[in-house]
Length: 311
Ligand code: UT7
Figure 1 (tube, rainbow, N blue to C red):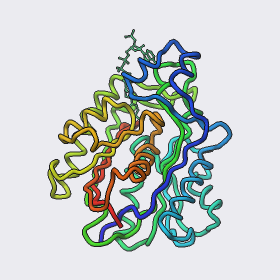
Figure 2: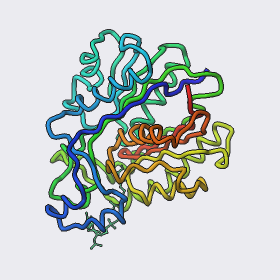
Figure 3: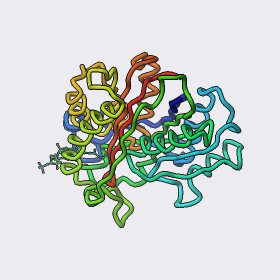
Figure 4: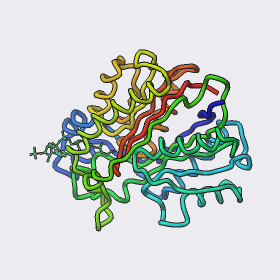
């Protein structure tokens, strides 16, 4: 039996910041941000820390899965914006969930983190090591954004998504995965000595356009499928133009691709899970759909999953 997503939830901090709000701060325009990135709004955590965002999403995901926190065998939190280097966010939310004993650790793979963590969870579920694993993708990027740099500041938002990974019925679940990294690209996207995001946007853009399409096709092939079998694509929400390139590579119509970037901006490790939650609510993802999740990010890293949706 395959591992699959048996519960999922998101948490978005309440404060919304629009492109118009940034027009007051930077030499920028709503028109530039919308047409170059697809972003219209993003949410910023004012008082909440990364662990608060993670806890709120995790609690609801556990409820959504219909299990109790005590049944969780492992907690994996994908983030690059921990409250502190240690204890991990995974250990912090374990305490808040009122459980002790289960394994807990953070995973550092930037925007690919949700795919990395879910793939790790899959291995432990399918080897019968654990029944349920809590995966969280969470970022408070507002604390590492350089608020004097219009090139990066307008792109990012804060948020969390959480999923419970467990066994699903025969034929459903995670059919295949791809994970990868190219450390030589680390220089294009990193946390600089001022603790701010540095990004060579054009280089990351070129890499992402190539890698997202390639990984999406690869996971379908690994699952014994072709692009014609793909019902829905959930790409990391970094830039609408990058997402469109991946969609076109799969030959999917517009309505078959998840698009939440206009609401939340780039929330890094949280973005794919957040998108899935909204898509499920809007009935865009249905049981037995073949869904491809694909992400890329700092590292440089990438990852993709092909899932036959449903418990
Ligand atoms: O999650 C993974 C991490 N990041 C990404 O996926 C981002 C990947 N890269 C991108 O999404 C795009 O490269 C950006 C959105 C960051 C930039 O778009 P672009 O089309 O590659 O623009 P550019 O960097 O080539 O810059 C075009 C112009 C520049 O002006 P000059 O040098 O041509 O005069 C920038 O200074 O746009 C200017 N610019 C802005 N103008 C208004 C950059 N940021 C802004 C801004 N408002 N916020």
